[in-house]
Length: 191
Image (tube, rainbow, N blue to C red):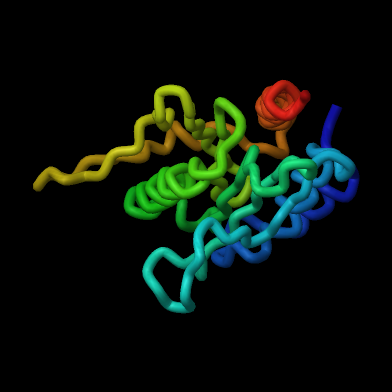
């Protein structure tokens, strides 16, 4: 089984040499709409994680956050994606910044979290790293560290982004996570 013809077309349309993540937004929008049924979930491009004044540090003015929410509890985040251009992937500093951004999103989204585990994806184009936040123990996995050493250290190794979401094994892994999110949402919001 593969993605829909629309999603595959959007994937073929954008090359891995693209330096602007905006060209990947239609692809990720299609993936999310295909994976999360419209009757149960809302997909929110550029979801505001906190009130921000334009230009203030911490405002989202350089990346898109897709947040999938349960429509009956529309202030309850259940999943999100941060998209970066694939050309940035080779730089350890860009991977570290992407991982730190994911960690910051978990911190902000945990305020309204109503499920036991929140998943976030860091995507460099089609290549993804899966992160999760366990609300019970307040832990992000994998551990996101900062390089505070005087020596260079790769704190966000390339092996974290080990899945191409368009390939069959990448789609399977993505949909397994989506299935877990749907189950958690159903259990957390049923009453």
